[in-house]
Image (tube, rainbow, N blue to C red; front, side, top):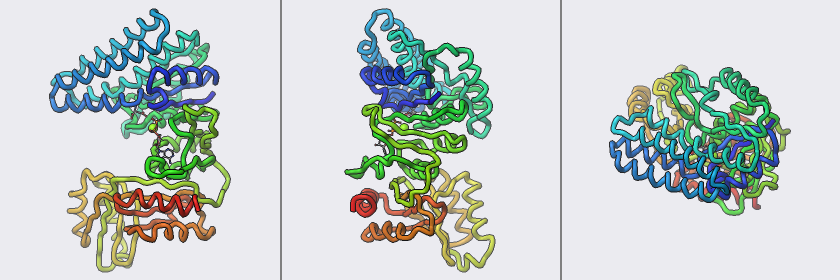
Length: 438
Ligand code: ADP
Ligand code: ASP
Ligand code: MG
């Protein structure tokens, strides 16, 4: 059995839901994971925002607009009055529930309930549509098996046993459907796996059932060799190693959520990235692929802050780095890049929630300077250090762009460079030309 995950755009309209229904029916008995229809989770976030600001009327206005949108989807999706009525009833109940949570007592508890409704709606609609097409699909509620523990990490053994029980209970199903993104936390409350987390759901389910493959169906034909939002003429990469995919996802390749790679890698389950609009395109296969000795792709991560701590004699003063890292640890702030010299160390962070406290503490150990609005540019491939030329080629492409930090050798898979965010697009285009188009 495979796990097939469809993102927001793939189920973004009645026409697209029909396409997905056709696609999953042709592929037989698999587990289908759906995101909310595109835009819905953003709208649910907006509704929550109004409620946090105690503007209940403002929130309800948007709830009504969203409900109207779904009325139109239902009218277009279903052919028979019977199924149209059933869908209207389901959706009405969901929107009435959202309204019942929209009060001036709104808290983060209600917010998480509201954010979960997008995936509950999309899976309900596809399930009913499949039934109308006489396909015996079964809708499994992710809230019955997807759970995080006290540390907010997925509770793998719980997920495995609960999911298996559900699959056995419905062993006659032609297709299983479930929601991406949503889960329960250690207290049993409705929660989620963070924005974009449906990819993670697919990977966790894949790991739990030992799937033959995890397919991530989206709006582009695989992982491209550069970010298609900023660079023209990018092309899909046919194969990536799990570690290469992890670097790209973490450093900004939006097509894949960073958390999605690890469960697949640990269980050695191939992940295939495919295009719903072009189902025959080859896409990208992520697996333990053999060494290629090539640069495969470039990605960029925004909103990075660089911090430099200068101290008289850093490297000879053993214990200095430990003290610096302990400060970041005490404020639960993870570090992305590190570069060192005898007189100082530079690190980058993307979470600036506790920046002021961190800076106050760091100032006890040296002179501290901060660069805001930076971006990490990450060149990824099979860059094992005995291979020559990759670093030269990469840095040569950057010869007119100021580079604040360079990191190489942390793994066999990446060269990272820190630049100003305003130079990001230039950097990505320069690298595209030098690494792939020359
Ligand atoms: P979904 O809603 O299906 O989860 P996402 O919007 O999360 O889809 O991811 C797909 C988008 O990722 C593409 O439309 C593309 O703009 C963006 N993207 C960023 N970097 C890359 C890349 N290197 N290769 C392919 N797509 C990328
Ligand atoms: N619907 C959620 C989001 O928009 C999860 C996902 O699409 O993966 O973030
Ligand atoms: Mg996504």
